[in-house]
Structure formats: structure tokens, C-alpha cells
Length: 439
Ligand code: HSE
Image (cartoon, rainbow, N blue to C red; front, side, top):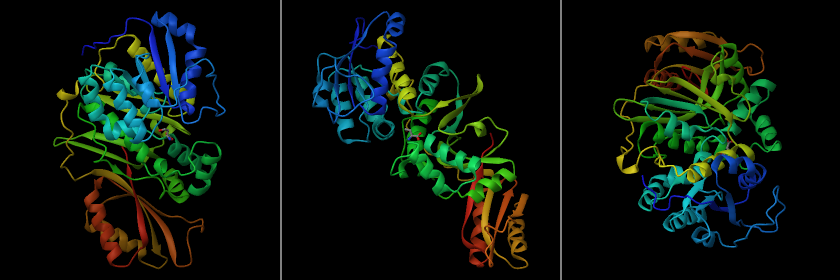
């Protein structure tokens, strides 16, 4: 790719959005300016800033910068080479300023995963048409340089699977349930008190934030267009302390994973809570950290982990993108020009072979478990472990909490068994089913 407006001079930037990430970017550029200038052999100058509220108390010094009331004016300004979009939100003003900046010939850097997941194909095509860069390292996994890793370092490898912990809020909640033996609600409250979860946490705990990031990773890994809409999304709301403890007794931890796999007929993308072996590297990722595992056909398996959110780590990724612009990067925005990418195709394969964890409430009467295991045997499902929690806590007079770990079987067989049990009235409520992810 040739950029008409390759930058050979000092680089002038404009920043729209001065929340946590914007503040971090300003602090990083100020604090490390000498180091940055030495490495780049050019100066990065903030020529303009814009945010909702000029008078707001901020954790950074903005006194010397030109204030733009209207971010669109900044996006069009002849003063800048690079427009940094840190406003957030899938569309609205964030999308408008991004489009305007690209059409005005600016390079754009964004941390906005929702916008890239939903409008990335359009915006990247627009950027390629205008010969500008649209960079989004900060949109995936905060400070972890996974976009560059896929786009550059691993670009010669054929990748068939990429998965990881892509949401720090969920990872904090699950690991704190496990480490402090508390339920989901208490753990969420604690996460909110510490500022790790939003007042309305549904976007994070519902798996949507992780899915946005996964759609971008799939595209980079497999050379296909970004497709958010086909992701199967399950959040962590249904996970109880009982599940966490039963998993632990069986040698597993529960993590919310985003998984994307290339199959013969297409790609399968899903975000869901999974059991992972407590001996795996990914199970050791605690708290607000993120981790991504990539399997390349020449490099083998790589795991990269670090802080997946927060002002400073995310700012580090934004500034990494500023370096790419300053160094006149000619790498395509998604690792290859968008017109060379294959259209995303969802896999037609419906059979999923896995071990499964199942928890259900069964009547506390003779033969309850026997009925379930008989049904499993009828569907050729072999059991790896079964236990009835005996601490009495979850066993009411009438029902007992029973957990089963199956050997490898299919999702289809598991669903048939659960249908049959439900039909026979042998179970109370809906069983919890969690896939065991081979790690
Ligand atoms: N809220 C996200 C997380 C960070 O908890 O990982 C920004 O995507």
C-alpha cells in the first residue's frame, strides 16, 4: 500500500475523547516524549483536543493544547496528520468523526472495538480508498500487542484457531468467585466498587465486549472480512459458585473464552464460559488480565497475556499505532488489503466434539441419578466424573445439585439427553451446560 500522505516530517495529531484512555495517551506522550523522539527521530505534537466537557477535572495536563468544541472540526483540521478517536460507541459521533477524518485524508487511530466490529469493513475500505491508515491496536485486549503480532510477526503462518480471555471484567469476576468463595452478585459488586465493572455491566458480563474483540481477531488470523453478527454469545451471568467449586473439584477453572476456529466449510466464532484444565497456562490468568493463544502452522502455539484494559496499558497500544504512522508503515490495516480478503463464511459443521460439564437439580429420591445415567448410556455418552454436592448448601429437601463431567461426546447427544430428562420431568429448571475447552 502506498500512502500519498506518507509522513516524513514531524507528526501532528488530534485527540477526540478524553476519558481514561485519552488521558493515558496524553500522559504517555508527555512523560516519554524524549524517548519517543529519540526512537522516531521526529516529534509527535498534539495540535488539538476535543471532548464533551472542557472544564472537567482531568488526570492529565491539557493547558497547552488547542481545544476544539466540535470533534468534526478537529477531524477535518489541516493542522493534523493523525486523528485519534477515543470517544467510543458503535456509531453516532464516533463513526461520523472517523469517516470524516478518513475522507479528509487523515490517518485514524481508534480504541473503539464496537465500531470496528460493526463497521470495520466499510471503514477500512474507505481508508484504503483514501490511502490512509486505520489502526486499532487498542481496540483488542488493552495493552497486549496482539493486532501487530497477527498482522506482522505471524503473518506468514496459517492459523486454524485463536482463542483467549478477552474481557477483564468477566475474568476478574470469575477468578474472584473462585479465590474468595463468593457468588456472582457479590463478585460483580466488588468489581464495580474497584472500578473494573460499569454501573450497567451487561455489555461486559453478557459477552458482547469479548465478541467485538473476537470478530477483529478472527479477521486478522484468517484473512476474512470482519463478521460480528455470526458470533454465538453467552455471558457469565449463569455461572454460580456451585459451578466454580464443582469445576475445581474436577481439576478445572471456569473462564469466559472467545474462540474462533477455521473448519473445512468456514469459521466458527463463539464467546462462552468454558472449563479449562487448572494445569493450563490460560487457567492461570487471573483478575483483569487478558490472554490470547494463537496456533500457527510454523511457529506453533503462542500465548500472550497482560493487562486487557485501563488507562495506561490501552494508551500504550494507541501510541504503538502512532509509531506505525510515524514510521510510514505500509502494512495493510487488517494484514492484507481488504479486497484480497475472503468474505467471512460461517461453518456449516454443526457437530461439536467435546467433553461437557453439566449441573442439574434432581429430585432427592432413589433412582434420580440412575435415570440420568441410563439416558446418557442410551445416547452413548460415557461419564468421566459424577458427584452430588454433599455440603447440604444447595440441596433443598426435595432436590440435590448433581454435577457430571462427560467423556468426549457431541453437543447433539448432550442436548438429546437433556431433552429426554426434561420431558420425563426428572430435573428442576434448566441444567447448566459448560463446554470443556482443550487447552
Ligand atoms: N471493559 C473491558 C474489559 C475493557 O473489561 O475487558 C474494554 O474493552
